[in-house]
Image (cartoon, rainbow, N blue to C red):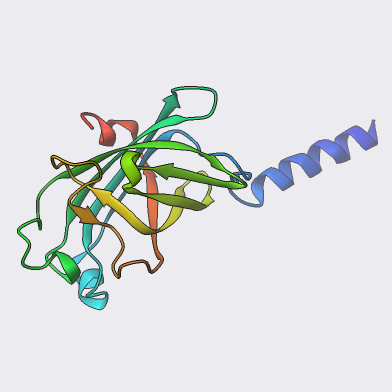
Length: 167
């Protein structure tokens, strides 16, 4: 009896030590968002994103989840002067596992993101090439990478599913 009580207490304590962290190969469905303040953008003049939202959906197949991204570009970095700042740019993604790394990728070689961390409150991804926005060709109109072919990380907070309505 005492052993069961000790085991139950240990399980509760371990569960309270911190948020659950995603295991290799997992990418959890949900709505994630980040709105960057003007102060943050001023400290990071190469950053091209003012608002970013990612919706990871249900399984499309045995290996792929549907993903949708929406970005509002900041008027700085390589976006300055392009006319894209303040527009809503969208992108459809296929989210799956590549080796041990969960990824979401754009069709037609429009780039990808790699999940680096995920827990109950947020996810972090990195990219060095991910195009967003519709155009007549495959891919998109704006690269999320601040500097071409250099890694950049984005940490998005888990938000209510309703924040991704209409994506």
